[in-house]
Image (cartoon, rainbow, N blue to C red; front, side, top):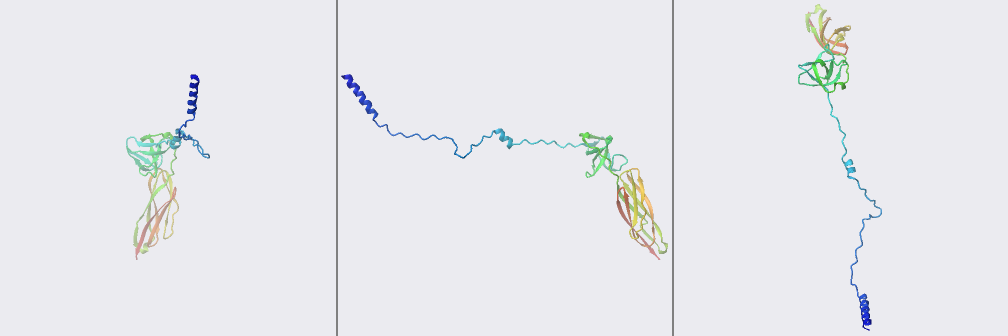
Amino acid sequence: MRRIIGCATVLILISASCNLPLGTQTPLPPLKTDTPPAGNSTPSVIPIETFLTYALPTPTPTLPLRLVVASPKEQIVNCRFGPGIAYSVVGELSPGKYAEVIGKSPDLAWWQVRNPNNPSTTCWLSSDFTDTEGNIDAVPVATAPPVTVSAVLVSIDPPLMNVACDSFPRVVTITVEIAAYGPSNVVWMWREESTGDTSGEMSVQFEEGGKKSVQDFYQVRSARDYALVVQTLEPNSVTTREPFKAVCAP
């Protein structure tokens, strides 16, 4: 009988416990996810190596310009208009100085360089008296320049003629000094401005560069102002003008 009463008591207690209120519980917040909103694309991850490739491009190396230069071996070296001693000296290179080599003769006996005295022009140095630095094999072969006349000077003797008016005609002497840079045949002539008198074509042969003087004569027929124009025709044109005068007394 006691066992039945005990069992009944246990059952009543269990039933009562099931009907007790559990109390107020705060619900857990929903879990958040990293899912992007619809319509947005997911960004791509760029490797750091790729970024550096675009941000820091590798520069293309440039080689420094290497010049070929010539310098005197011991003493001052003449720099000539062309590759040979028959050409005029137009510059010089002193010991301790350098000239840029821009050409060479076919026999490698001469170097064409920028003129040390005037870099806007060129001249030629003998390879026997100079040393070179740089790749001379890479320097192109150059040809001798055409010889030209560099200057023409004229003098009239006498520059002033004072004679009796009945002593005409009289003769004046024309002296022409021509400078050429090398072997050449120079053709020249003269013309008197006021009368229109002209000479025929004349020539002077140059075996080497330098100066040569030639003479001719002009017949003065009256008292007046004169001007003689001398011009070279070959190998190039150079013109100069020289005035003179004749006066007379009765």
